[in-house]
Length: 270
Picture 1 (cartoon, helix red, strand yellow):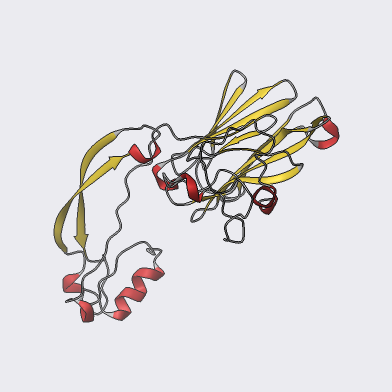
Picture 2 (tube, helix red, strand yellow):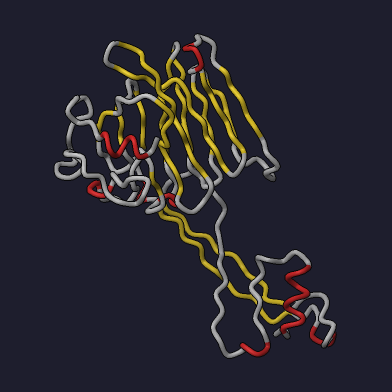
């Protein structure tokens, strides 16, 4: 157990993630958060690990108890990805939208829009659309951000036929975004275990987002709310629910129905 002075010293030595139990709170329950390794694989699995409970190396007020091992706790980690099995969100030109929970609608608007946003982590995917016909708009750019690191593919400026591809690493530690090129596809791996596939063809691109278990009930944007409930997909940026005519009702509305435009919803994510 630590005194308040020892706890202050421990925090000052760069241990903000440590679970500190004060001597004055020895009879209170303490919560220790345990995270498994981020994985791209799906399915169910179970692993065990051991947590060592110990005092810090230095306890100036009572060195007798310094570096003392209190005990070892065995923790079982269970992974179950059933909630995200076969889930995807896409923006397929020009662009037809599919939310994580299977709602289909049209996105016939020009500009930059938030396609996906995690409500807890600083992770976001934006798409940019431009006119590509008399009554159509197509994806001409995508930007994927995790922290302050951004991967971008864009040809929107002046409708150029040349793609601009940029990867900006802004003081984030480690490989925050991992990018792999596979033929005409760019696979971008997110720190949550999710994945974004950008399919480049000619002067256009399609965007597919594959969620991780950490996205359940934590997504917003044009991809909707990943919750296994298709009736809650159209929350606006301000947190209210869309009043567009097709935002409620039949979840099986087809994507290529021009009447299935959710103007209020789409433009709130602009």
